[in-house]
Length: 209
Image 1: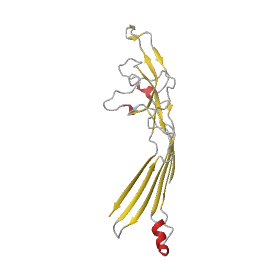
Image 2: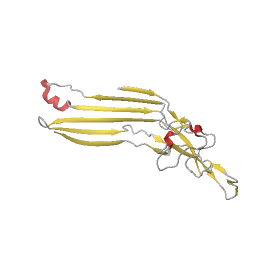
Image 3: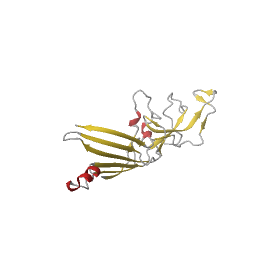
Image 4: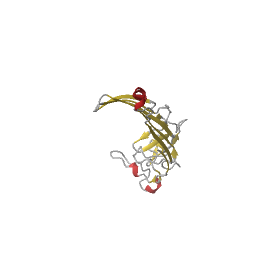
């Protein structure tokens, strides 16, 4: 089976409302400004899967059939482009009492794209017949078989986010505004800070009766 998907998901932050957390809308008086790529937006996705169950030997090669038949191999290969995230700012730059809804000035919601993703999963099974009704199945599985480093930026329940700057205030205040203030940008503001799981291998023994 082979599939390729090209898509573009756009919304106005409907995914931002998470129970028990403050909204991530930057300006509640201008919700239309939140329109942009959805956190579920993935432009390109390729998936290939296959199942191989060869039976090269038949009754005229009974012993060879017992050794080489009843094997099954299956695999899934997934490759996807990066997903969008927002360049957020810590420090409550817009002074609304919400530290989770501020973005870097000039950066719209989910305007940046994170690293791409690729993984190969493999499953190998061998079935042994212990009688007319009892079967024993040996299973070996590997996830991310090629041990690819699938990097990702910080992921929150609201999607992909990365703190690209910090809003620094001082103790001097005029009205509700602090003076002077500044944005402090780290040396590598948008680098990947985490990764998906490395290669994992598991074995299993299944009794079927």
